Length: 337
Length: 234
Image (cartoon, rainbow over all chains, first blue to last red; front, side, top):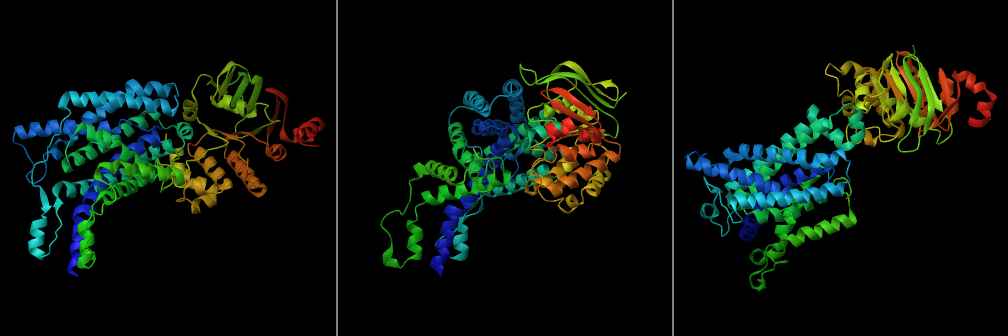
């Protein structure tokens, strides 16, 4: 019995808790990608770097606040800096729309043109971020580190294994739930949100109903700024901020959006957790876990790891390919790609 | 002065003209129907009146006002509503939300208009929270007409409203259209089911190759031997 409990705690500590946090971060990113796909009708390759840009501004403001001695006690100062990051990102996105995407919209360009334009924006952002904050790792988490410490739990329960939950992980999940609920309320209950769904459903009919495309597009970019900055900051608090890592996040984020069904926000959230759990569960070494659940002398010699962590992105790739082959519209019916 | 006039319309989508001096006139509260063989430019004539394509000659008048240069959106604000033939609903939105989107430009209380639409199409009231994409063809067509009525239009334009629906549903839809016309709304529609459409029409236009071939009341056209022979199958 105690072995089973230990096995469960072990899995919780190294698989479930990190996967839920990582899944929430992917979900927030994927919802942003899916919104752009549903409403502006292209795959926004700049999304990873938009997250990096927003997070960079948040870090800069965090440092500014820290230098003034402003903090939030046990919570990271970055929360205080979030609104500034969101505003800066929104300004950048609205500017990029005005100077780049609008031109193609007026020409009624095909989606692949937007996609290539977004790759251009991606490289610009890539450069800006590296120019301002540099290509190196930045840690900006402050305040308390843990909500529950594994050691304290072990002592309290007298078990061999314990579960630790970081502040950043708790914060990620709570923030993700609030943001997603607010987003769905906005899309389903407000006039502007409904007009966005209408625009996504049937652009021509939306125009015939008098819905202004400019307003829908602007609101979409502002939502993307909010989602991307929050997702980037939470990821940065949980792990660390490095521009290249954010660029690499594009793959699992796109995989999440496609697995869930492109253009479907609910699907993007489900997709985020599918990708996060698969990535972590397939790259986790189960040696210790197996040792707990099998009789003593059956203990494996190897690591019992399906795939080395270096290959974690391959997991997203494989899931992506399988979904595209067998269910191109994703788990929740979205648009096929 | 007639309420809606498309006068001497000439134009098309690209270089080649599809309409050649076509005239369409509808009076207030009247049902005007455009019929004709495939490729005659029926839908094109209607789209020209709604401003969805450029005409280089001729003009369009609504209640005496020249609206030739207005965009379709501006014409919606002037009191025209258009129901396209296909993809005329928001499929992942509920029936009620579809109607709300129809009234997007209105800032006043829309619940009264919505009740009127539900009176006209009682089935939609039962399905108000169901997604429009999950409805049958006929019900979807009702949602499309209902959405257009939400703007409280003075002119309702329907592009083949009965395409792909069963004969029973078609009769129902025609009854609904007569009811709408009785409230004083001018109706202009393009129809494939020429006989039934002319039956309810105050005025019928038979178009051939972008030109008016016959223009008369629906009944006279139905009794005209040449129209019967060429377009109504005897």
